[in-house]
Structure formats: C-alpha cells, structure tokens
Length: 634
Image (tube, rainbow, N blue to C red; front, side):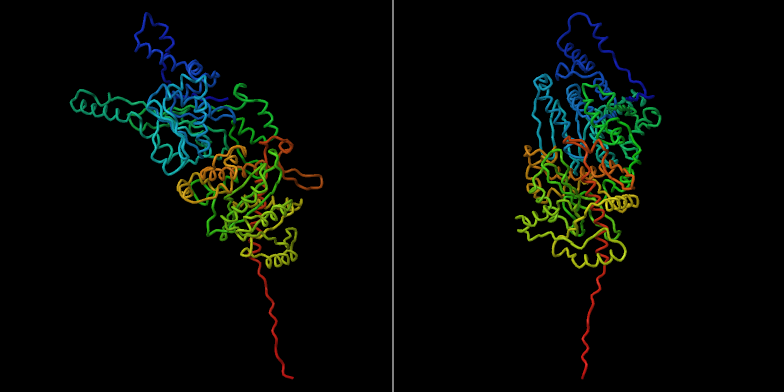
C-alpha cells in the first residue's frame, strides 16, 4: 500500500470533537443543529453507520475524508477493492453536507458510469438508510442518455460521452475506469466541466463590492477575498501498463505531491490545487472487503503480469510475452482518430470475417467468437473493427449474428477454423434469413495453406478460379495443424512488430459517430434476441432492450479483450521443437464461468492470416489459353 502526503502545504483542520467537549450549558435550536452537523461531518465513520447503516473500515473512512479535503484524488485499487463503492458513498455524503453540490460521473461507456449511480440508488433503498434517504426527497430519473438525481439544490448525474456532454458543469467530476478515457477526452471535454464554480453569482457580487471599496480607497487590492478552489476530480482505476497515459497522469500527480512548486497558480483568486493518491493492492485491502480466496484462485488462472496489474495495483512495463502489449498498444489507433470500432461497415471498404465456432451451451465453455477486419488495400494492412463473443447461446443466435455481419459489412472472405464449421455454414445456408435474402456461403475447396513454391502457385490459380465474392461469401476452412499454428502465430507477431495489423480506436470516444449511429435503424432485436444479457454475463433472464450505445461500447470492450487475450498467450516447446500457443496451464484447467479465454485471439489469428490469403488471391493472375483455328485450303 502506498499513500502519498508529500510536501503539500498542510491544511489546518479544526478538531471539532475537542471543541464540542468544551461546550457547556444548553444550546438553542439553531446552534444545536449546526453543532450536530459539524460533528457528523467530522466523524464520517459514525455518520455512515447512523444514516446509511454501513460499517466502514478505517481505510474507507480515511479515503472518504481525503476526498472531502483534496481537489484531485486518484484511487489505484485492486479489482474488487471497492473504489466504485467508495465513490458512491462519497456522492451521498457530499450532497448532504454541502448543499448545491453538482456531481457528474463519467466513464468511457455509459454502462460503467451508471454503475456508481446504481450503487447509490441501491444503498439508499435499503431499510438501514432511511435517514439518508429522507434527504433525497425527489426520485431519480433514468433515461438512455442520462441518470440523474436532483438533491439538496444540486444533483448526481451519470452520463455517457456524447456531443451533448460538452456544455455540462459540475463541482465534482468522478472518472471511473479513467484508463479507458483518452487524455484528449479528459482534458478537452471532461475537465472543463469544473470551470464554473457553484457560487459564481456570489463571487461576482463580492468582486463588484471589492472593486468599489478599492476605488474609494477603503480596501487594499492585496486584501481581496481569496475564494477556495472547491473543484474536485476523482479518478478511479486499476493499474495500467507504464506506456499508457494513466501512468503518466499518475507520475505527474506524484510529482505535484512531492514538488508543489511545480504548480503555477492560475490567479490570485484560487488556491493551489491539492492532490491525494492511494495505491492499494489486494493484500493491503481488508479481508472484509475483498475475497482473498477468490483472488488466490485468480492468481492461478491468469498471467503474473496481468495479476500484478489487476490485483497488485502495480504499473507494469508490458514488454514481456510473445505478443507484447506495448507493441499492440503502438498498433492501436489513438482515440479520436479513424478508423474506430464499427457496428456498421463503411460501404467503400472491404472486410475479412474470421470465425472460431463453439456450440456448447455450458456457461463455462469457450466463446463462439468472430472478428471483422477492415482491409486497407493501398497499404495491404488490416484493422480489427468489430468482434463477437458469446457463451452458452443457441445455434440460431450465432446464425443471426453472422447474417447481421454479412448484411452490414462488405465481407470479401471468410476464414474459419475447420472444426465444426460445416455445421454452422450449412445451418446458415438453410436458414430462413439467408434464403429470404438470397445469400449463400460457399467454400474455396482448393485452398491449402501448407503449399509452398510452385505447388502454392498452382493452388492459388485453382483457388482464384473459384473465388467470386459477387456470387456468394467465400469461405476458407483452415485446419489448425501444428505447422500452421506456428506459422500463423509467427506471422501475427511479425505483423504487430511491423504494424501491419491494427486495432481500432474506441468508437465511444467519438461522440459524432455515436450521434450518427443513433439515427440508423440497426436490428438489435435480431442481433440480441435475449436483450442486454450479452452485456452482463449473457443472462437470458435479462430481457431489457439493448441500446445502440451499449452495442457500440460492447465492440470497444471486445477489441480491448482481444489484445488482452493475445498478451496472455504463453509459448511452450516440446522436446521435438514443436511450439504450443496457449493460456497458462492453470487457466486452461479452470471451470469457472468467468475463466480466461483465448477465442478472440484465435479469430484475430485467423483474420490476420485471412488478410494474407485475400491479397494472395487478388494478386494471382489467371492466364486464359486461347486456341485459334486457321483454315487451310486443300
């Protein structure tokens, strides 16, 4: 555990409890109320138990107090360490003790930002929180584009990122999963929320009076009132890789804690901003908050590098592993740039679809996974822009999603794992959807990735004669032989090293694209017939209608998950020199529903190979032999 105090100027905090001990006699009603409010505000642990019915750990009390006192707070906690819960408790207490407070909760996707809001609603609806709930006299309103609860002259608001967010103002800005937010989004869109203080009218009035007093010679300019900087930014995240922007932000803040002189005061009206940083791994978090047995089981199922980041709260280098996360990050389109993840393909672009099928309905089985890669024909590169991962779904659900991809992306080639792919292709071709749309998936039967030299040339010529995307979506069945697996992984590694395969930027960080997508009629009921269960554990009992925003955010998550799966791949060699590319042994034997998987890595492997196949087919020339009949006079 590391908590930074640094060399920041110490702020004098009154010892309210000591002052209360010195009170004598009876208090009038107004003084009694003020005294009680002061006592409750400076005894957060007792107050939380009294009005919310929660028993805070001393560590939690300390963090809540720090959030009240500091302008900028960063909590780098282990997964499951309760940082979002702390933020929810703080929102409730802040609105009660400081009327008029405007709180905005933002994240890379709406699902994440509203999680804290939903925790607030859940807590206030408990029987033990009756006293706190009495302060929230209005009901929250929950819309697809905003969750808001007006309280005590202010509000708590959870928002998605869109063009409409630019005009918002608040006093407390909570950024959940700040790692997923781009620096541009934080600095250019979100940070300006804090530019207008809630007492702006009062400040203007005071300044006007002071100017008159200075003009009359009654007040010296140096004696003008200094308004306290009450704006707060609270950043929540697990640790990241050192090459990611969160680590730079963390490093800058630690420098400000140690060297406050690095901060320049913006004006005489504002105090120098203060900072609080808490970095807590799983061993530092009380066992009452974190299930240590679960953490130990996670340690056995994921790589040590991932474990130290996710649960040890340690910033890691990220250069290890066969597929380096550092290099994959360098092959990721920066947020705000194109191409970004897509739910509908660009009509001027061509795409590769890769499929790794799995038909098990067990919740602990592998994913049925797919990847859609956008082709850059000029550079002969590809960009992963769309993904699919389902577990425990019906075959018909997979067929509907394949139909969706083929009708919304200009797919030129399908590359599929040969294991059981015939079943899904036959089912697609016989389905009402495909027959009604006159669509059919056909095979390139002559394809053989093991061919070399002249044999490969002959194979390509035969395959080119069969290749006709206009007549139907062409599919290559790739048999995962040991030789091919070694070649494909080596090729994918080389493409990452030389930046020939890219990962799309987050579409949720493109507000203009989000707004454009809202106006399209995307058949989400066809794609996800069981509602939003795809988002949280794929529960078919969750029949809430899936929103286009959630669909877009899901694509961002799948692309990130694909990179993480690649980073988890370990390479082992047999005595005969054969290489195996798989998850760590402990992860492979896990039977948990949330076990680590590698199926999106497999589809990336197939899709990247598919780009190679596509350009080989396109470049292959077929020479047509023409025989001429020359008449001869006899």
